[in-house]
Length: 364
Image (cartoon, rainbow, N blue to C red; front, side):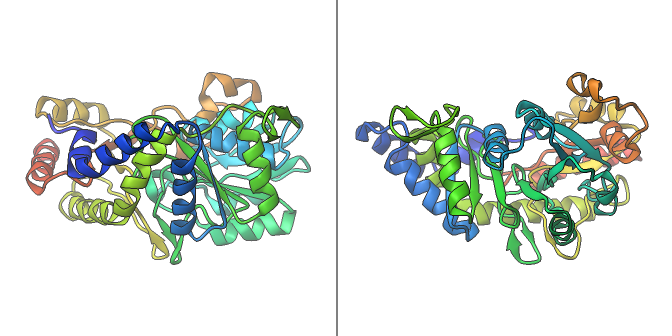
């Protein structure tokens, strides 16, 4: 079976570096925060060109803590795309605010910037653009709208580590950028891990407090916070991986372009806007025969996966907001047709050719 993602292959590609990092951490006795976490935070901040990076327990916590730091809560509305991983909506609800959905551009799957203004009300507090699948959202008009209406911008960069918008790394445009280091991400830990980045020192201080029970001084809680700290072992692993992130992303791009060249006549393949550097966290295609094609691929020993089968506005927790089928047709059509083909830096051309051959056999 050709896997969708082969995490073992990546581990073996830099096994010596990872093993050394883990053993050094075990010998150090520092497992919560400490020098490994500080080193990772400094490394990510430098890579992204940001002033502050705060390591957290997950990408989901990153969104929650970002909104808490910006005082987003009950009575507020937050604009998000209608096609994304549920956490984008769920975290808005977790802090007590209301997600307001906007349909997507049907080609890039990013939030349709031409529809944001009509979603703004007197209760709107922020916009969360999502760099879905590794393709940047169109940030300039989003930032312009935010300035016009006095809104905060939190970038959900869980899937876009290393992507670029007009030559600048995603996650660095808004008030806060949120990152996920879930194992399958472009820069992935060996468990859950996340981070927030910002250039605002006051926001950074607040988020450091929020990740550790609202402490500035140990054991003295100044507000209700969380226990959301990236652990030192995950930080050590990520530090070992970070120097390889760009080369891995370039390999993803090479493989993705190879897929598109050979499959473009058979399936709807991803686009890459002229201002975007897509890092292909997932290689997403679409077909009206999705289920039949996936079944055929499975028979041929090729894994595939749907990301995501249900738009968040139709999920059970969001029913109370009154959304219904047909409200966001592009998001709903994408959810019914898109799926991912195997893509990871260690995928060989021979393996990729097997995937391509199976798809072409079905479509012929």
